[in-house]
Length: 173
Image 1 (tube, rainbow, N blue to C red):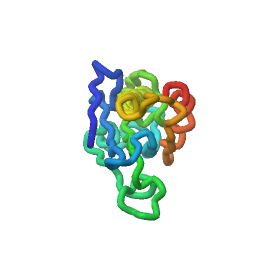
Image 2: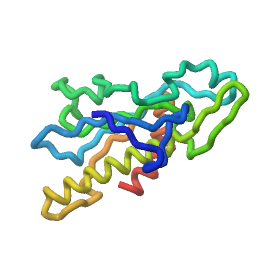
Image 3: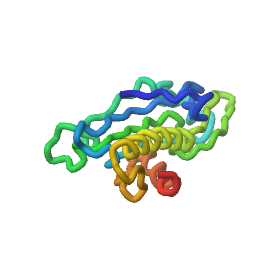
Image 4: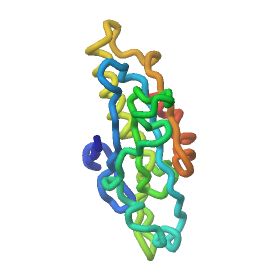
């Protein structure tokens, strides 16, 4: 399922100013929703007007992204230890290594919204609320942060994002 987070509500935004979107596949019925694998997409970095303007426009939006079905996000491969976990795929639409906190770079060639960290944190807040509600409804002890098991990962630019944002995820979840 793709979820679109309106900027006016969540404070998230893609590089072209559009709303941020991410993909979620909840754990199958009967499996605990609080086992979560998160993967942040890679895709390069741009630091100035010429390097940002040379990127294809689709790298600055997220609604065209779908849930990958390979590696740790694969839900059908019996050898994947995360097969039955809740999966979250965070697209990369800001070219800021998932670390931007709401800065607009108005270069001569292009304007780029740098909201990478805000996007990650908005998606994680959405996930937290869903996991929290499920645990409150289905566990006599309710939500307990020590019962959430998470793999927080990324590749390329997403690897930088995982390193930059993991402390926030630990604090907030």
